[in-house]
Figure 1: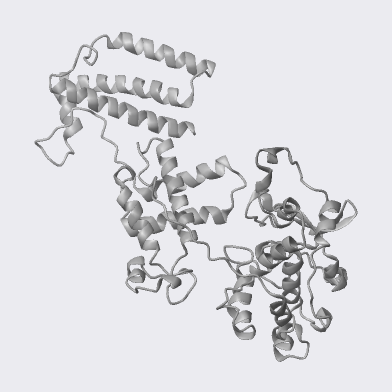
Figure 2 (figure 1 turned 90 degrees about the horizontal axis):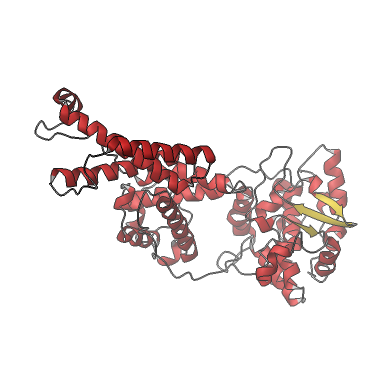
Length: 471
């Protein structure tokens, strides 16, 4: 916790103590413990205690809040007593109050509880301080969650939010369309207006997405409680059963359709007019690595290198050129051996030509704009190419991410060792459990190469990227 936060919390503690003391004192209920006696002695005792602990560094954060809060409480009592003994000071302190009949005995104005939105950036700064590897995309997801919550329930003071607000938020999300910030029909429309559309459930946000949003919201209120902005977390217990509607893998016939589609047919008008080598290579790379689309789009030529004598893709977030690489999780940082089939398709020759042209990225014509590195590539494949040339895939929930599913499922059927497969695709090694902390860098490149060679696909031999001249 920053010292500035400690001071704010101590001030709030002092105001609470002062208000309690003042209420008891003016109602004749104060005991000798609460009366204004021996203040100078108390001051000396508290000052000495605080100074000693600050000088030695012994005081912990919660103790600092208590000690500094009590010190300010003593000073507030002294200021209040001065007002009682000097009417001129009392008049000066109350001259700007709205009601002339109500006077504030304390010179300290009670602090208004901040609204939900007002502490968001402080929360995100704390998240970033605790975890420097957290991505901007993750932080933006938190912003979206809190903005939606405020729009649905109202931007209330944090100490007035209720469990019912949490359930109202969850129930509203169930009625909102998927990808509403991207689709023209829904973009920039108020949430109330979207709910009024009464869309069918299958067109609305998935329960998994809603579960993630509730997790973000709960995390925010956990932090509010930790920083003593609230005493109880009203969102705790607001849940939803998540039913996963996973994307389907590609069958062998599907793969034949994909690699005989217009992009892979040199004489087809689409290939001649819109085909690029970057788009051509995107799908074979996805199929033979199981990598996420954002990871593929961020690959640089320098990321294809020999490790322990094995040619590998180095998937990481180290980018000395522009420092914009982002990975989904810590486990996403990995090496994946280059599958022999990619070399047969001409990957090394393709890379050499890119070097001669002065390129740095492996897929240079695929732009990286958007919240995620693969956003534009995903829009092209899922929204344009699939719709126009791969009929039926959309209804069957077969998307670009299906290449990753296909790689994993094929590997499992080929009896690839699960923990090695998890390492190759960037999944947390769940089977390791407690021993995960001893795993170090994991399996060697040679061990992974032995496993990846078990994975085989049947791709038509007529593929030839050289027929496309655009990068």
